[in-house]
Image (tube, rainbow, N blue to C red; front, side, top):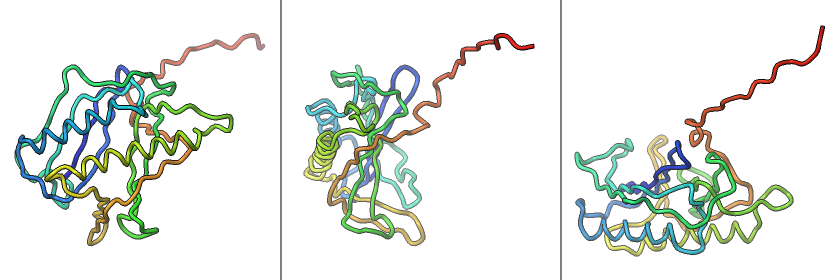
Length: 206
């Protein structure tokens, strides 16, 4: 199963993240799906907040996918929030700056040994050395781990895992979450921002 959620970012961009789990879900827009919707909404807006208000939660999808990564069913399990959900604090960073949560499986190498989630508009401030503090990184890791735990506890969701489609493919259960102190970037989250250069003509010269 592929769980994806996202929405508008600033005024012209979009963001989304995704998780994969074992296929124990009963298809259809029933109580199981609504429980997933409620869990993600609660996690997104509850303290400690790690995502800035510029990234708004607008939609969620939870669908069965094949080994090719495409939807298996002709229908889509989708929820749209109207109005969109947002946290109460603004991020100091532009839309391409992300905080990366790494999904650990206990394996140091090999297929599906780690996964990543690029969280938009982080709230963590940069320390004097250009990195977020260790405490902020630990708080973010705890927050992401709480989402995985909440989802794994829902009947029918299954088990959050990292998947790989390389060669014969592989999957491993997520056993932990780590967050580093260095913020990352996703260039695709600034693709709609016009550069709008300000010209200055050369002064002087012969």
